Image (tube, rainbow, N blue to C red; front, side, top):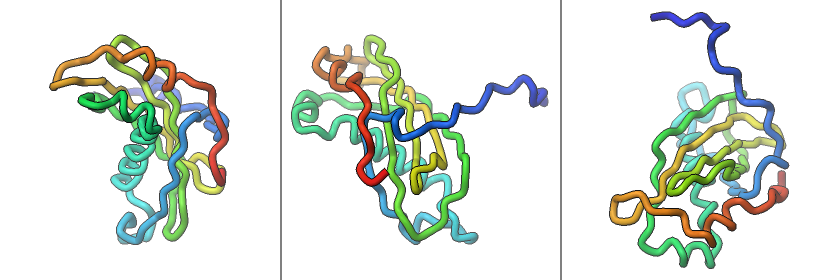
Length: 152
């Protein structure tokens, strides 16, 4: 069945660095490119994964995560512009919602201050393969106020 383009969901609004709390810089590698020398979609998905891991990098939170895992149940990526090698990108992440054992992460991949890709990840916190309620300390950490990226 072919859908009418007018019935498609609207694109993510233009994201700016101010939307994000957590930041992760990534250096582009030649191995991230395709035969046209632009950074491929799989590399962007890997950059987004690195950005999500930054949510739990702080030592106090990483200790609270002992025995817990985060899995992605759904990842939606929108590509706004091509990225060419060489260079760097900054990945911004912010938690927009936390349920009992799940949470939503909004992300942006930025090059020179411009959002070149955005994503929403639906994540679940697990312990021994079963959903685990998000502890209050982790919940407070994830919902903190946004900060500016290092180097934009």
